[in-house]
Image (cartoon, rainbow, N blue to C red; front, side, top):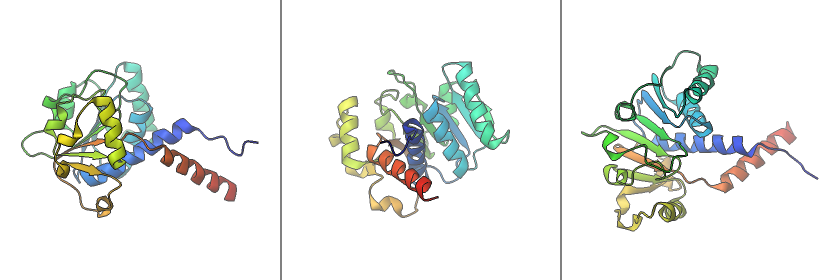
Length: 219
């Protein structure tokens, strides 16, 4: 008989958000103040929530397909942080990205919404996270960033390569980083314009589900 009924969707959203935050703590500017969320659905909301908990974000730019989606995001964030965070919804994608320290792209679009020309230049640090790899990020972004980070090393690279058709073998190893590398636990941030591409690790979902079940049954 069933021993638990767990919302797998919620676990996935929160696990993904936790992954984004862990990568940001290593690869985002230490004093990040401006966040842009492109695609304020469940993944975008959870990522914003986790980032706002850790960083002293002053403004969140929201790029949404509809006003109702942007309003739902506002309600979600204000429910946790009140009106302390400014949320902008009308600026252009290019302007939002160029001014942002952290950018999370979490859309269902199969066309690029984040273009290489939007990224920061002149040595300014920036953290970009693409939750659907290169589905909604222009391929040439890969030539503009200093480091490319994966959540599960070689397996993540292989999965993204299959989808995007990008040959990561041509990219210098010094630019490729894995969050499973122990070096990423040393607490030192990595400067530059950094691109994080999590593909999701189902074992993490299972581990979180087991942890939640243990908490409930031992409480």
